[in-house]
Image 1 (cartoon, rainbow, N blue to C red):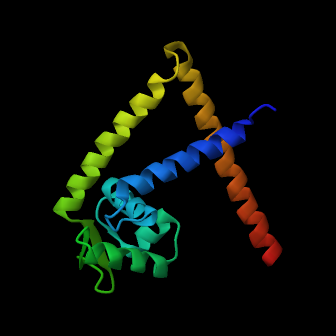
Image 2 (image 1 turned 90 degrees about the vertical axis):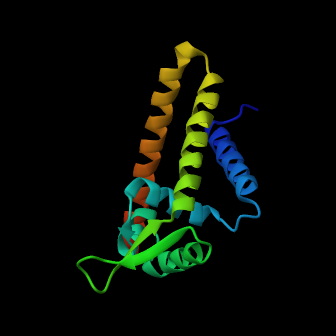
Length: 152
């Protein structure tokens, strides 16, 4: 029986999850916390409301994530400069170093994975994966809209 593309994609997703769990074993960092740190690295200091939107989680969920990351010394909250009701969440210096290391490792892994593909095939593979990701995003968004409409 032929292995479906979807099976390979699921296998890749599972391998990434297992590797991430291994890399962060014993650090207290969960996938959700690492995702929030990654968002902060790329978005810069942000309000919790913005972080909830960027992470696609509820404000209550983001509060719990920020609480945990603040307790572990990865982020700090500072008063918002113009909105007394808001705080700004930013990476601590040690977390910024951790995220810079993660960015380097991310780039290295990208290069390692691409090296597994013949040079003449790399552009096609990248285009194909981008097309699959874009189409899957559309399917997921359409399904969410259909569920919201059905619930109304």
